[in-house]
Image 1: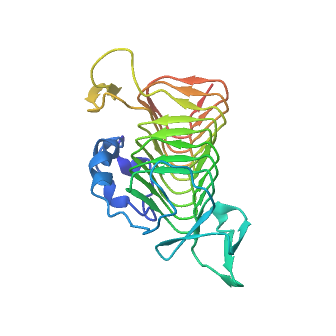
Image 2: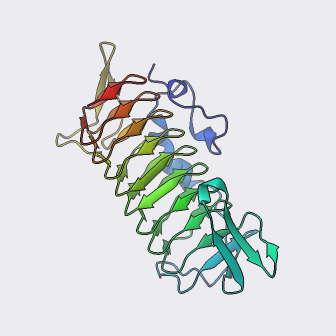
Length: 266
């Protein structure tokens, strides 16, 4: 029951080779570091994106090359609906990505998909893989080892480290995610916090169906199955797992362990 196939539909996830359907659902977190360390990152071959220095102007990435945006018309439509448009001399640059002035990228192990928007003030530390039509909002802090699928939102003043977003996962406002996985079409209410480190030493263990399971992880935030949601200002204890469609109500705290599909936690 705690296997990957019970929580996620991976048919359209670009990095589904990180997952195995019969493994425990948290196993991808154990493998994420090695997976991203060996990922084939693009080289944008530009002096416009300086390591650790805020961009002085908007930059457009198109067909693997970074170019200044001052000759482009940018239409800031809904990024996750592929409505970000970049035109150059009347020609639409299909699949182009925009990194806005003031964003900071560190390291050379960053992959940005097509139609991505990185807003002013966002900070992305290597390694990171951001999928097509994702939006990294103002003030977002990606601390490394972040992997997303398509059409995700990494939100305003949201801090994310060593975590995975499947397609259409959204953490839009004031959230903290550490060592966590968001399933397809999940949504975090503003102010959601995933605690990821117990006060007690040692690996986090779960009890399920009368069996004690060692996760192999000292740090373990939360895992949300497809279509699960959290309300505003909610908190999860380390090692919290939500089945598909589960809901954590606003201002509530979820205990560690497994919560079944479509359960409602108050």
